[in-house]
Image (tube, rainbow, N blue to C red; front, side, top):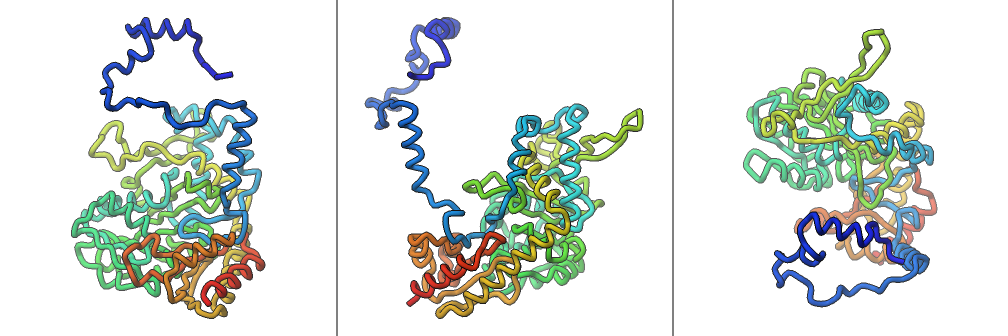
Length: 447
């Protein structure tokens, strides 16, 4: 039986109000050349149970991240998400809640966002954080715009180790003008970003661990930027690394942006993600998004308020700090729940486990004939050079059920220097059997 939400009588009433006789009359002004002359080539209707069986068969053709050895990272990582996270975010009071436009009646949502901000500030070593951004890439672009407002300069220098997608998003926001300097890919080192800072520079953007897995000397970058009156923007795509490496804020970062997907949020075919942004208290008025604060009411009872909504796009429009219209609230909640369950000691143990598995992976790859490891330092991600085009090798291993990482040429097409490079990641879910399967298959493929 077809599902029809309206009866024939109801349809007739609606057509009468509109002033037409048939549904076809609604499309009278559509040019005949734009209308289909034949039926759409789709299967005929079928019983619900047969449709379900058909859809399940299609879904079974997918190779999910957990179906075999998985070493893909590059900005989106496979981590374990406790079942309690999904259970809690699906409670109706969270799942149906929207952005707190009436903050006085959104105390639960505001308290959650306040706790989220506190967690992000502690993680990044900064003084203040906002109530989430869309994702890491757009947060990076917003940080660049923020730096321009703060310094009243326009020149931005992007490190060659910045994720190519993040670079492209910044370029979309700023355009391809002379004030945006995108340094060439630097798979084996920092590049010359510190030598590109001058008195016109608003900010330099450095990622750590960078796209190729290298840990970066943030203190040297901060000192060089500040000496020229510029700001240091630090990007972190693997937020779990902050459980082990020193917080960017303690090393001199002015703005820190992260992709928070690794905590509480599964891969989900590419999204949604959650962007984190933190900065110094003195810069708070130029921070995009919104800020939740803690206060007391007339009776002295603890309460939460929407302290700042610096975007003001509903009032100032083109003069607004930002045109971000909302926050990634549900993903921020998942992040906050997972991090609360871990606690500080749990996050540190999780980070150590990721790093230990990455060390095991690096050792196995270094012992594989035909493979050269490019990293001297890393957290849970690294780059190898296999001396031949990497994309076909990755495809051959995928055909064997091994997702062996990302060929850099996929994100940096046309750059012959990266054709033979593969970026791989290990997480707490990576097993010794996974690593053995990868290295054995890779050695065979390279013979």
